[in-house]
Image 1 (tube, rainbow over the protein chains, first blue to last red):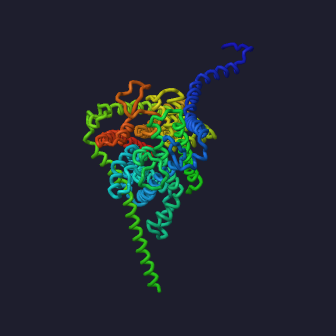
Image 2: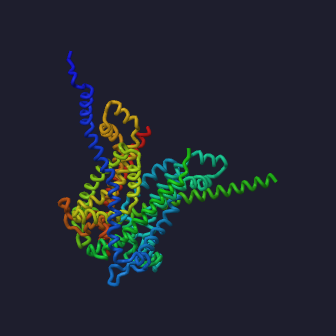
Image 3: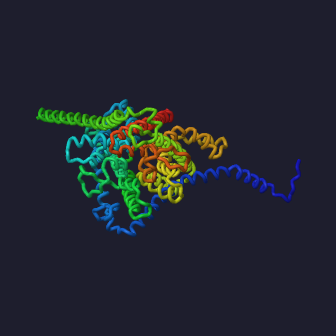
Length: 315
Length: 294
């Protein structure tokens, strides 16, 4: 039997040894946790990076061009001898192509979603849905090719007024591009409407059309609207289709038959050209980029707000 | 009186049924238009380009003569950039997802990170190009290199990887973790040996989707300063480069028919790679879902 030394506090020593052991065991845990935390926080730095780069460089731009001129001048000719810095032509072009795209994608996407959610047999849905998802991965440069070399010649055969580069062709193809996204997201929203609601309506003698349009769509409306806003924001930020098919002429017009230049197409044009960095001409891309970022961010936030605020929660 | 009410009802019912049929037909037509246009797109491109898809096309550098132009430089550029970007996005994305799902307290910081990731997924890709140009090319002085391009694309697809990995990790039932803890495993041991293997198919699906998105991205790399005419393959991470979509864009924007044919051939190669990757991801996910449900 060991004799205990009365001058040593055994309980404390034991606790200390234990703590050291625990510390050793959990040290790697803490290091790992710290590393993972840094990775998670990296996304915040990305946002900070985007915002600060855009604001810093755009601020340099706005030292030389007033915000008032930027927002109200109807001419955009920074690369010419007589320079004008009015973003309106780029904005109207962006609006024209995105609204045109939504005119295609909204009705077709919504109707396809209704079909998939309410009418189609399960087999059809199980085949079509993955196909739509796979097709949603087609790169936009491919759609650009299709717009310029397939749709535009057809449009030009129909009407002589249409130029080689025009907003119409780009809008139509962009509508087809965002169609899978619209129908897939809307269908998700419709399918999350509980069956009991549909059954109640059927029990009251409603036809399928009435159930779809008066029960399912109103119940899923927040999700559908959010899908549309997300799709519009995607269309606004879309680059390659409009760069390839809509042209590089900043015309202040809503005429879909003539060449125009969207905000994204302008950024590409400057990047491909030999404009020296640091010049006022080059800084324009940050001002345009900032405008684009603000518009799409506002739309994404709006879409999230609608889902949060207006979602009907059942059960 | 009863008879006329009955008649009225029948007439209305017929009309309601008729509207129903018309609506059904319209819905069917819209889905056919949507799928049909996409089919036309694929067929058109195949018909335009299949003659050029051969070994010579894959192993030639771009040329001023359309019939000699090939995609060797673009192919290698894409492989280098995407390989690096995919590895980066995988590492950082999965790590971030583990932290958010397994470690983070449900406090304001976690919420901010979460909202922020959602918003980053909605930022137009061309804005990432501007970010890449300023931060990687200029500020970190990487030049317009493979490395700078990979960083740019990795940031672009990071939200996709994080969101998919989070979902996969969340789908692992808590009982598995509790089992681990009950046996005395530490948190990290539980995650590494129990949670991650379960979540892996879901994570993989997210990574494949992210990589296939990155392969098709054109605009951010153009803005970042990738070249459009490159007669060499990259010889390291600091080399200048081009990628397949940029090469295609370059050919599409030229007036000569021959280059358009080359563009179509390039698109065929791109689509074969992409669509098979997406199909693999969708397949993996469906199997994964069934396993979790079953």
